[in-house]
Length: 489
Image (cartoon, rainbow, N blue to C red; front, side):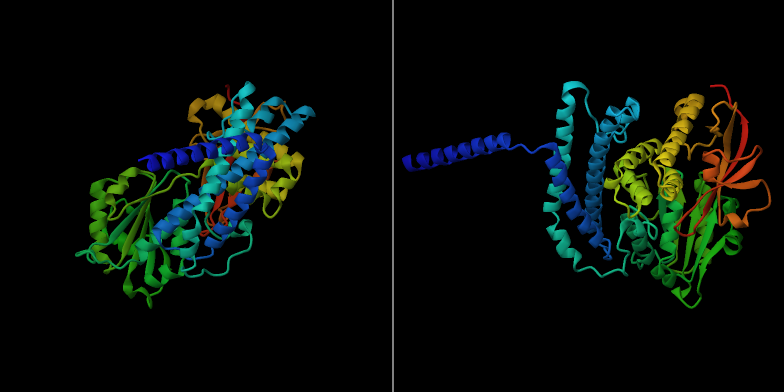
């Protein structure tokens, strides 16, 4: 008994001493903020290497894809935090030099709710706590990645990928690897459930306007495996399906792909809906589809409405906009390209503010990343930032909380002309997409988005070529615009 008691007391004393020594050393050698930031930068470099390597392998295991998604979220969060601290330091320097007002110097903290700093004496403590949390989370993520790397080596290699992320973003979708693999598994899977051969499988894809539903579907349809698996791919929109008849499916729609020598006659039907579709209409449509397509055919239906989830024979894919950290990473990489962001802290601070104001909008990122990359000058970037602020301020005053996003708002959007003394403004009445701006019918004058935002447009109605997507089907996005008197606020 005495031996056991003695051993227990010895173990307790040893642990207590270790705890006290460890606590003393932590207080004695607490790393500075600069040292923490350097540690975070080194860890993010390791994480970035793992992720870029993983993107070069064909991963079909859903658990591995989920872990890869976690790794990417941690990387986005880490880089976002690193850039926030860098922009904060630059904002403080500029404020001391009286180059900007206090509002802009503080605005770099606003982009994400995760980054909240207190005022007064607690600000430094809050910043240190945030940095320590992110640093610890990235460190733990890297420590848990060894099994992932081991299983990764068993996956087949993809084709040679570009060596830099900014080139990769011009050739593939960003942040949709799990959803893409979900679609591929659905399309290529052989039906094993009794009766499934006679009843084509249906995959619903649900998400808000301009979240990337059509782009995701197009990317899957362009995959060589899908084109070899189906003899034809037919596309329909809501207007094509008003009568939901057999004749509509046989004669209507747009043929996206056709190769009678492959796919054993199987058909892939793509249905993209803008408005809701009644369940009775869907049942007639599904019944008509069964009678005119062969066994093994599939249906994908995409809509903003959650009601289509009940049409599916499998779990729906739900698309969401990126987190603010992922959106900032996307916008930063597309804007700066191969240029080191650390070498341009002034531009990075303005870019982060623009990303916050654009509120995770893909079209906004596409338009302004192209403009900024082509005009790599602080003065131009400052004008671009002022333009986005102008749009937000003017339309929030007019519409209030209803104006959430410039590029998703369905009422006229106003932009004050660059001449501040002018009583007129530009107004965007509507936007739409087309295959190519060159195929546009004759009509109002066509101008560039740079001409619109920076005041080189003559009075009258005109069209604006906003941008052309770098991903298939390479749609060009257009605005119908005009000039009119400023409405009362």
